[in-house]
Length: 135
Ligand SMILES: CC(C)(COP(=O)(O)OP(=O)(O)OC[C@H]1O[C@@H](n2cnc3c(N)ncnc32)[C@H](O)[C@@H]1OP(=O)(O)O)[C@@H](O)C(=O)NCCC(=O)NCCS
Image 1 (cartoon, rainbow, N blue to C red):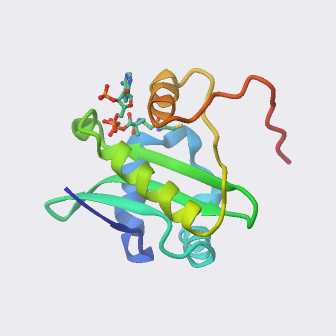
Image 2 (spheres, rainbow, N blue to C red):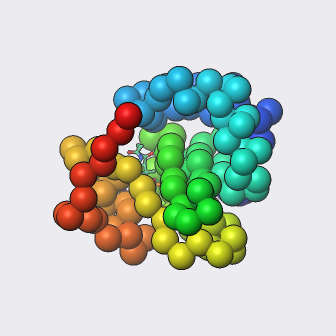
Image 3 (spheres, rainbow, N blue to C red):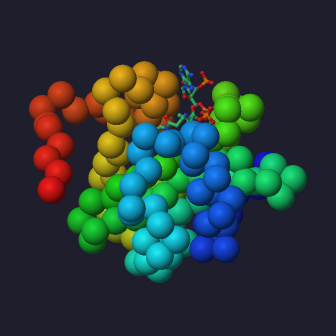
């Protein structure tokens, strides 16, 4: 398994992967143009995991100058529980931290217990004191 930064040239493969792993979280923010803008704004932070050249894991990572945010943390079903997710999430957080950002947030659906277990295993604490407001 290899890890490297995500490139816009990966778009078709990662978008196809997200149809399997992350369908509910997809929006217009996942168009090629939007992902290209995101990767330019947050250079080298988003990661992919490869198995023999095939992308099997993704994480979008960036920050707003104050807090880090992670999106589309995903591993293809047949590659799960091999600590691939752990490896790319750890790398993503490392990149955010290296930019001087002390805290990173993740949005996780309330019924996604796998996601919650995963983030807790990485030391993230579930917040019970906040709602997310979106506009
Ligand atoms: C969440 C996800 C990315 C985890 O990827 P992964 O490569 O399988 O995770 P890892 O192997 O690195 O797991 C690390 C730890 O997370 C926890 N974990 C992961 N999957 C779990 C599961 N299905 N049930 C319970 N705990 C789990 C475990 O503590 C695990 O450590 P262990 O295997 O030594 O017990 C993957 O399940 C996935 O793509 N799910 C669909 C998309 C999604 O829900 N993403 C999260 C959005 S918030």
